[in-house]
Length: 244
Ligand SMILES: [Zn+2]
Ligand SMILES: [Zn+2]
Image (cartoon, rainbow, N blue to C red):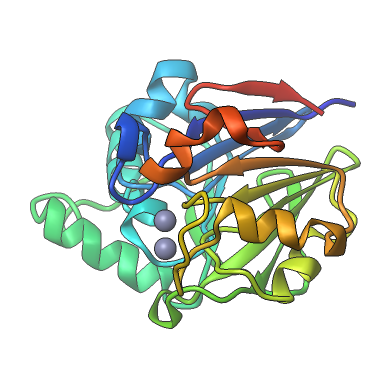
């Protein structure tokens, strides 16, 4: 069984280099879900797939470049005539925040028109839950505390895909990455120190602590993009597709 990993958005919140906001598609037989759905995700999704085929969305934390695409996705699927249920997992306040965002963006839709496909929200925790044909759990990481930051662990078609979400270096990332076949890790910076984000240099300095296979960098800001040629780890780019 194989897992397709498609990087739909690999940029930071500022869309440095024109990269789209965080959005990664995981697909296997009977499974199809997004990891994060940032503000610019709907156009990125529609460039490469039919949104109706998505069963679920897992959100790492409550920043717009990671969950801001949800209102657009929900509304588009309503008017596209979606019938299949959609499950969305993420931080405890995700449903409330996504609803408020929807009401702010499309007051005429959210709160007035009932979404007529089965839409459900679930809080992701350290105990895995079924989501989009995969088993998904979330572990706390260090980022901006108000965003309720988590790393995600996704068991799909016998493979384990781990995703840092946004995080500065902490031992918590060791737990997120443990045993993963693929660890998708943020690397907002190349060497710049930031209390909210990782740099490539920090990740390399701690690489030996990570018990995981392949590592792919994402959430790349301008400084990291300027040093792409020097990276000893693979860096994602928008539209990149790989198979596990
Ligand atoms: Zn971010
Ligand atoms: Zn963030």
